[in-house]
Image (cartoon, rainbow, N blue to C red; front, side):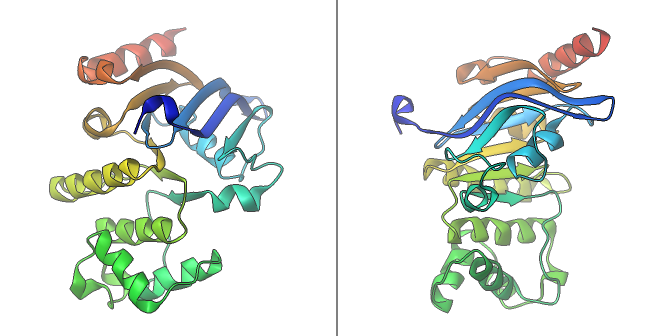
Length: 245
């Protein structure tokens, strides 16, 4: 996809959010374009989750604004959420329902109607093992639950995918398989925002990397710059510098 033709799907402009006397996010700006994976890095308390919650419409910004596909979740949360799919660290699914039943139910809540065969094909597309499709979610690994979450995103034709610590707790094989899935989604035009502590996956998968600390965006890398640096050293340098300011 020609980068010049990529649309800005996720936009964060001068976003600020505070809780009482605590400034959780301070005047940050970034975009995620169609077909782009942006890795949002930062220590616990950096402001990543607050930023995500503003994008999801769970929190109202105190300054600036956010939008998904040009829609502001503050003014139209329903339409904004129709543009995106959110996969938290622990994917919330009904444990007694099967992977297929969860996909059908969640999709219908989102207004998506497909045939049983089409839903099953989506689970096959995300490489959910065939033996698991009709088994209860309670017996799924984290990686398998994530695949159901991605299938839900595919079913609703989401333009944006927001991931919160997607690779924590995954073994190397499952992490690699998840990486291939999100790269495939990006190649299909989905804009992906991935908040993570996994520096390796960020360096391997992301087209852009943004580092947050103490509510501020302290550094950003794009394109070949990501591959040309020691990301761990750069990350630690910027986190330490920001922490001493």
